[in-house]
Amino acid sequence: MRVSGYRYLIALLLIGWGCPALAASDAPVDQTTIEMNRKANEACYACHSAAGIAKPPKADIDMSKLKDSRLEPTIYNPSDHGVMDCRECHSKTHYTDYPHAEAGKSETVGCTACHAAKVLRLEPQFNASVHAKVQGVKEKFTCFTCHNPHINIVQKRLQDPAKIVAQDNHGCLECHNSSEMFAKFAPEGEKTPGLKKLRPDIDTIHDWLPNAKAHWQSVRCIECHTPEVAENKMLSHEILDKEKSEKKCLSCHSANSTLKARLYRHMVKDEQQKYGFTNSVLLSNSYIIGATRHPLLDSIIIALVIATLLGVLLHGAIRIVMSLRRKKEESQ
Amino acid sequence: MSERVYLLPLWIRLWHWTNALLIITLTITGVSLHFADPKLPLVEFSLAARIHDLAGLALVAAYGFFVIANIVSGNWWQYVPKPPGILDRCMKQARWYLWGIFKGEPHPYPVTLEVNFNAMQALIYWFIMYLMMPTLLITGLIFMFPQFAPDRVFDMDGLLPVAVLHYLTGTVIVLFMIAHMYLGTTGHTVTTMFKTMITGWHEH
Image 1 (cartoon, each protein chain N blue to C red):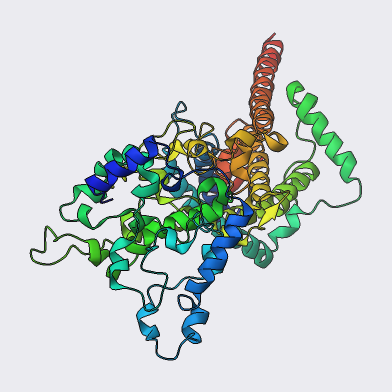
Image 2: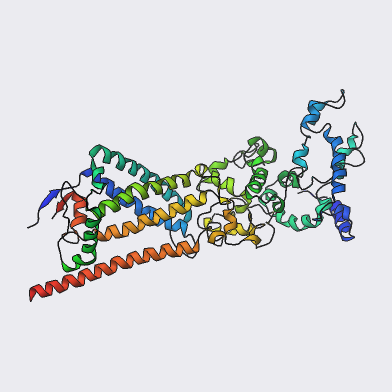
């Protein structure tokens, strides 16, 4: 999360002065603006999309250079930034004509330009994160390393926990499940001087976790790899290493499951104990043993077990008493 | 002077005690998982999950052995309540458990080589072994491999009905186990039936 101090300060001041153009807002964008922006973006997709690369608008364009800068409107449009004109971030001055001026590359607007207040709040968290504490890694990290601004959709809009899990875990696994990507960020290995640290195998380091693969499909890496979070608060950007991360299964697998404040925090307000189940909003996506219980059914079952135990104890006691009585009668 | 008859072959006894050990293990770990709570000091969750998985798979194997051995040996016939008068014999047996046993009356249907189980026993054992156990084991296996669970049921995760069925059948087995262990004391002496299950010899 590299933030230039100068630009950071400017952004903060602009927000302070109420500059709407540079401050991210939850207010809906009007339909006319969206249509205008999407129309403008069509000029970009003419080259920067699979269709554009397959059928270039001009014969003399080297499309091979675009393989890392292509996007599909079907992916970008539903994303959080999908209502915006590409040139809101990608150089308004240099990316209006073709060929683009080289200077445009350095003028891409960073996240801080709009999200300065959030960055200000998150930066100390990131600085405490495992990614910032390893020498030489912090400098390589930007918001984009984990958050893809062309694709990502915020939890509240995405709604479906399965989709949230797939999106957010992709951000982690893109590096942690790819040796090639991991090597781009990895520092020198402690045991391998002069060589980069090798990527630890994701299955091996999680072998303590029962049904690890089922977990990765149902919850996000950050459920365990971020510090405890209060209800209605945003998850911390402090990513915890294996020593500090959550290993207590009961944090999620209990009636007071922390998942309510994490993966399901956008749904908790709708909790209605559906069909009598505790944490029924969790059940909308996953049955989580220990967390998604039916208190009435549990009470009936406990009562049945107690009744059976008392029943056999009573039966046994009567047998003993009657047997003693018989022996007494026989001896008389 | 009591009579002795060699009633239970080695395979039944080995299967029975393996089954008993596994079901007790599964009960303890199952309770630890279902009623997981930081205030309830039971088996640690991840350990309970691993033990429950392993013991569950062992129980599936033990059940497979039970079914095959029952077919091969013909022992399955013992589990079939034979007409006529099944209900009357069940009533007579129930009356003995609720009254006759206190008065010191003899068992209404003494065990023979040909008929090990009284009608009530055969009916309950059949219900447990051929209805409850397969349901418990199949739901347990789906729990272990959730990709085989229905995707969604009543707008909730499809694993929910599987889990509830597993919980309910598990409870029935636990209730049966409590009664079964207690009724084991109702032989010629309190320990007679336990000895039979160890040595194979039954005392009248």
